[in-house]
Image (cartoon, rainbow, N blue to C red):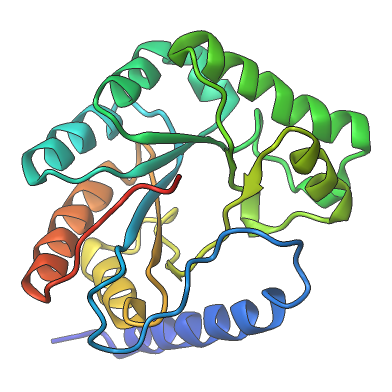
Length: 227
């Protein structure tokens, strides 16, 4: 039987994300949100994205799952993790997935001075280019927030901020069912899916991904990477 407290917490989270998105979108610097979809509109692709990798417990398994399903996703990697696991970055690139910058150490960008902001972006860009041979144009700010100074740095580097759509608190171990339920209820109007990698949430990430793919395909939707 469902836990009423858990259901209430999930409902409050859905409401808070919806309100935060409505308030944040008009005031945050321009970036990629994806066009809102009407219920039943399957013509535009969904974007499946993963933050906080690369992670040995999730990245290789995600690649196998996505390959099996014929899906290309977008991975936003943290520089510290790239330095630890360059082989996983090379694996993701070799399998044709898009890779973006998620800063070097995952700070809250508006609290940094301009030099530190630039270092967080540039050091991660340099690592990605050294491994893949390509410059990334995609940047997801930690916690989804960037200010005008950060936006200017991105523009100077010909990069774009990528925000969010269907997102849940899956950086915590809330259970795959809760992750899936929240994302599926947001999909008709929020096709930009945000998920997270991590050692402690590995099984949740993999199980939720597999279930979401099955449900999305059964409803006639398809996926594409962000470019």
